[in-house]
Length: 134
Length: 72
Image (tube, rainbow over all chains, first blue to last red; front, side):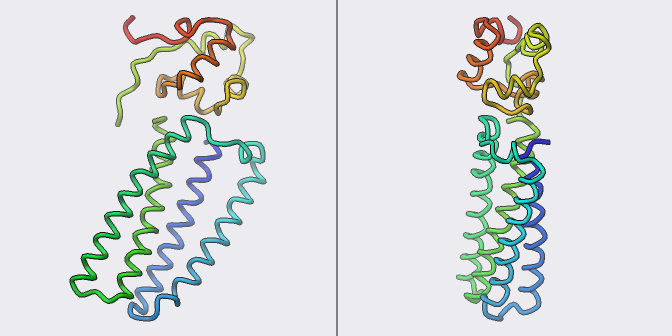
């Protein structure tokens, strides 16, 4: 498994775990101010991402320094393209729900949720394209 | 699932003819990862024209001596 694939697995799992935690926080108090669940979520993502990338770099220092090659760049670009569509779909759906009566708080949570889902999709697609070799 | 590219190659044969050059060493020499060399050898990935030329020049042959069109 290449360094980029390992990194995608780790980051995808971090986003999945923290995303589920965020959903749990929101479900416990759906109408509470957004800042309540958002701040600990963002901090958790930042800290876990830094720790995971440092550990990966210590384990494979040479690969960590190397830029993505042409096949990896193509995989990353294609995954980003598809995940952008996931984000767009989520945001538009959230706006439609807001127009239909959702509160502004739920709109923000839905947009953040879409961002989380699209990021997870991006890492999952990267892994798929790395393995399929584009 | 996408179709395999219709490009054949002799990269593995040429590696073996050149003192069994490793996939990692070839990848490093032409600027791609070992995983990309593996994907090229297995016919799952067609390299860019630049990488194809780099591989051919490394082995001291022409691009058409390394890569071909399926069925030809």
